[in-house]
Length: 417
Ligand SMILES: NC(=O)C1=CN([C@@H]2O[C@H](COP(=O)(O)OP(=O)(O)OC[C@H]3O[C@@H](n4cnc5c(N)ncnc54)[C@H](OP(=O)(O)O)[C@@H]3O)[C@@H](O)[C@H]2O)C=CC1
Ligand SMILES: O=C(O)CCC(=O)C(=O)O
Ligand SMILES: [Mg+2]
Image 1: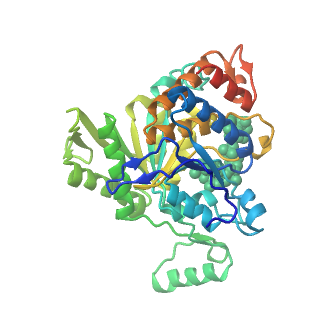
Image 2: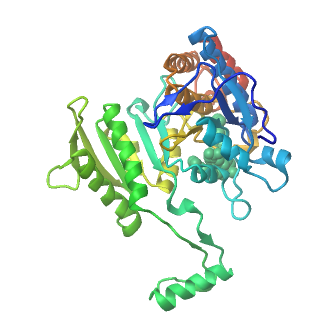
């Protein structure tokens, strides 16, 4: 029984088999969250482009029944002032298995905690998968942007994002500082009276399930390497442990053998016979290497905060967060979303690039096995960009571009299908 959601009369749920494969009906119901800020601009365009691609690919034999569900500001309008993430939204996301969302606002400092993070945690969507690829013709600050071809596996359930923190001067902070200094022998909190505190949990289980997915992806997609990115020289028992647990898992579960005395190790891809190098990089050095030597990196497995930074940095290398897609996944449930946020200064102006959410939908179609429709989306986006029919973010960096609106770019894609 739903409260504020209208369940479409036509369409059926996607279901999951015990081996985690999907049963996708020809008329699946896909829940979507419009999103705050520019969500109002990009989400309807994404739906229009996806519907056009599905129609063109399957001539009416397949069709998505979209079902709007609510989170963020729209949820407070329907469910009450303090209800940002209604229970029925979470229930539907779980029950319908595959969904897509626009960005949701998180205030800085005080106010509500991130709804995006809450969704990932509540549904245990422990993989944040963000592929970074170059489209020909996209303006980039790099001389050879096509050399950036990486897939980020960002751990999505732990790290400093767990939100275990206390404000400076609060009872909690005072209590924890007293405990640390009196019972744990900690004497290195420089200004104890005015320190806020955050806790960074990183577990072996959390690391292993993420790294396992990253290595399996490298095997399935014939990738040459998996790089564990961490700041383990400084945070030894969290980020350093992530590295060590990652290497240990590669050896234990995938038969990786030490390379040149270690710690790098090498797997023979059982599907192709080619080598997959498991290596690691310290996060600061990694951020300069992806600019200078991007071709040396392929699959990236990293912790939550590093993954957040790396996602936007890599997106910039191939043209910016206007075309940076992503997915949040557990073994069974998948929720697709763009890498960018709500870009509030552009909200409601039909201005921004809908490409990130459209490419997130493209990932969703592929996940559903609807690869013909996904291929049409990739081809249409490629053609619109080559024709220099682009939104402001690309137009401002391109010679001779025709700048179009957010909806105009969607129309250009449909014209190019
Ligand atoms: N998963 C989610 O829902 C996320 C939510 N957020 C939230 O979004 C809010 C705003 O965050 P903010 O840090 O400003 O980051 P945003 O990603 O929203 O915006 C930063 C800049 O990125 C560019 N940009 C963003 N979206 C697009 C787009 N669709 N097309 C082209 N360019 C785009 C714009 O650059 P320019 O100014 O150069 O035009 C924009 O000013 C915060 O509340 C934050 O917490 C942030 C990230 C993810
Ligand atoms: O939750 C937020 O507001 C920000 C999240 C974010 O930046 C991300 O997931 O990349
Ligand atoms: Mg981010």
